[in-house]
Image (tube, rainbow, N blue to C red; front, side, top):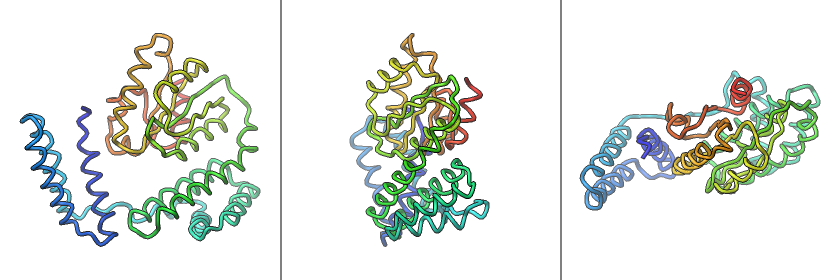
Length: 290
């Protein structure tokens, strides 16, 4: 429907790396694509099959090349790189209290909360995802680390909710079916620090509830996060219903998440007003739009 083959081919490249980390050769993935081709030919109408086959052939071509994903998200440009590495080490060893002490010390010594969010929380979450992809850590490590970071974030709220308020309101959530919460929560917190009145709804929010919240709270902005590409059509459906409602069509909509990083104009295709690659950019865009 959205004709975004980049999403499919990027997934195949990601899957290749993930499978190799588990000692499953890329040849098996290529064979799987061949079987997919056969099934599509048998089950799909001719024109639809040709479109699907194009995706499959392009993905097989990508498999032949040595595309590599990021080796690490810990970059030398990170001003608190050593602390980020130490924070991740604490989490992977199950030492949440030490991770909490590290973050508290940073804040006490003058590190801006926005910097901690960007240079500690964000990059360690990305690094954890990479470690799981490469089979270096388990799902248990991943889930524990995310839960620990969310807990530590909540201890910073006394700092976050002291900002002087503007007359600006926003609603933030992840789309129905998308269980990834931490990114949109970080975004909501940064808006709160910037003086916005935020109505944070969390992950996996049904379409009807999002529309009800907008109707009730009358925000100037809706921020929608989506991590899994197969939820993109839900974002498109939600935005279409908002645009078709005369009481809501003045609400500005910013989208973000992994699929929008892959396809440059995907935010336009789903009907949003803007795309933000990260929370800091989302705040900047929103202040310019409203």
